[in-house]
Amino acid sequence: MAKLFLGIESSCDDTAAAVVSSDGEILSSIVVDQGALHAAFGGVVPEIAARAHTEKLDIAVETALEQARTSLSQIDAIAVTAGPGLIGGVLSGVMCAQGIATGTGKPLIGVNHLAGHALTPRLTDGVVFPYLMLLVSGGHCQLLIVRGPNEFHRLGGTIDDAPGEAFDKTARALGLGQPGGPVVERAAKSGAPNRFRFPRPLLDRPGCDMSFSGLKTALIRERDSLITARNGLTEQDRADLCAGFQTAVADVLAQKTARAVELYLEDAPAKPVIAVAGGVAANSAIRASLKTIAQYQGLQFVAPPLALCTDNAAMIAWAGVELDRIGHKGLDPLIARPRWPLDDQQPALIGSGKKGAKA
Image (spheres, rainbow, N blue to C red):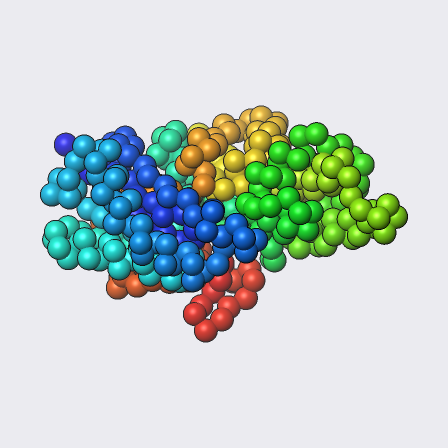
């Protein structure tokens, strides 16, 4: 008989709860967006996010249970994001989950937020291990070989800004609002991608590591040149800048993924797959470029539905299912962690601090 898992996610600015069965059925998935709370600040304010999570987590859980037509007594286990993320938000989710687990006596599984994204293709498409995963979001960008529910081999990643962060900064620089990914993509649809020739950082170097900070700086220089020459920006200028920027990001991700495919195929996978997940995976231009790479290399391309690319609790519940199957609890003792690399055998991409490796 299938088990029921309650998932809780609060690592950034989305308060989420979901109920997922061990046979892969999403019975409910509730996401409470905080966009309006942060809009005036041009980005996520950690203190505001943490407070909002505290106010909404119990409501999200209650709603998820109602939509799933189940109760806490029928839940078999609870899975919660224990990191990485904004520590106030992560702590809010962990405390909520611990309270529920203590009150009900249900098992509690700490989940790495990144593992939730990386394992989503197993939930949506039933892909088999090992598969190649491009995890690309607001705070992370990694190319991984996923060999098991808690076995990830990092082939490369960003050494500075994540793509989502670069999209946000680009939107802010052009006065387009937030979140940056969707507004830049919308503007780019009416733009000319070849008007501005932006750099493709690190493509002249071997390996799968990426960089997006210089690309964002190049866009700002072009913006400033236009403002100086014309005393302002037109809507077409903004559209062309967005189109050029988006195309450059897509090119870098596609070419670095193509290099990662060669390393991945050394595993001789029975059913080779390129999968993409994370918030930036919702970008249609990036999806199209990755799909082209997959077709050229003869691999299946998997991109989860858009609602499961951005932060959600269904992926956390499913990661709990996967960890439960192998008898692994995810994190023991269960503590909130701002940093938690998936592959702790590789050196940190962007350095370490007192709390450990960042990525």
